[in-house]
Length: 474
Image (tube, rainbow, N blue to C red; front, side):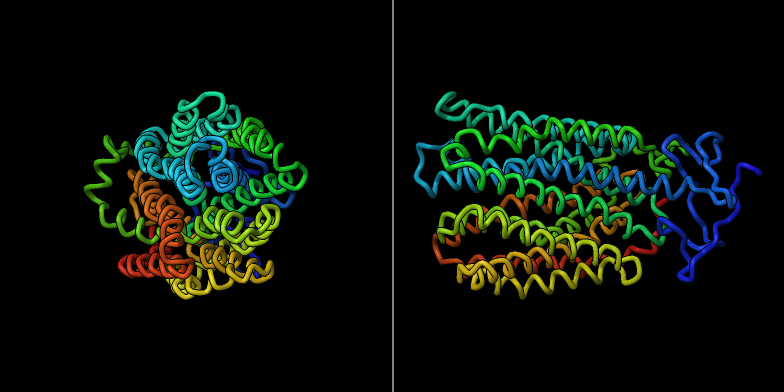
């Protein structure tokens, strides 16, 4: 039998395992972990003559893109949960309760400010050197910064140096995460068959759901199993220290994948950009700004429903910490469902249409969120949080393919990362701070109007962008 495998049989839907296009359609060159499928030893043929390298490699790519984002967002959300529950006492004990909360959320916001810088740094090398090596570097930076937060002494030991070092580590977290999402999304999208990009981009988009669930679950277990004094003394550090082990797992998976075929073609044809950041601002400034605007509501919904509502319910309404953490974990299932539904449907329905649907739902749900929260009834609070994260998932799911498809291959890492992370500054960094101030001044209803306003802004931005699902990636 020749090294070129015979065409696979198609199912009634016209696809084979792994979401591949039907026989006769144009497909990218199959890749294994070690290179092209026709390179010899890397190709494994089934007894019936079917080439199994492509489905096998796509499973590996999906796993690598998913596990990396899950670990990095676990790290990021562990900090957000700690900021809502304990960092004000550990690092800002001399401030009033409101100012200590604002200070803790400010250190939280520092990472969002750093994320666009991480996009520029990692985006430059991602568009010049390749997606794979940059993803390894971002994982290391993010994971180690998180782990060292768990080792950092508090204000009682280091005085003013404690919050300063906390801000530095949080800044490094932001740099690392600024390079993570763009690379993970491109890893999935640039490996995927043309008509299945939304499907494979769903895997890195599911990473935040799993990372948040894991971080919240560990905090819940510690809150349930430890008394308050032990939790505030050392228990909150455990989720950060676990990052050492998670980084090792992530590195093992990511080091086994190949460079994307799209970027490999850019290298082969000598089309690499000499200055990706400058070029993307010159040629794609509109896509960057509108893409960032489209992301505002996704970030705003998530961090209002998680970080802000966790603090609001435990310290403002007096809901037990363990109850709120359990409700947050339940709500996270709605996020995963919304993400998967919208991402996979976007291959047939279009990215833009589903993102607009999510924005419209969010504009309405923002007005429902806090009336439900203020009932202090666990079922209604779970509905409030779950509905919010479901709306977020419908917006967020298609973005894994939508943002990369807006940019040309030579500047795609820089462009997609910048749009994604600039949206994080406006939606994620600002939301808990603005919500805290609005609630203190005007009550919780004002926070709901703020959420709806973010949804309207994102809706207008996405209306100004084109549909992209049929675009060639180059």
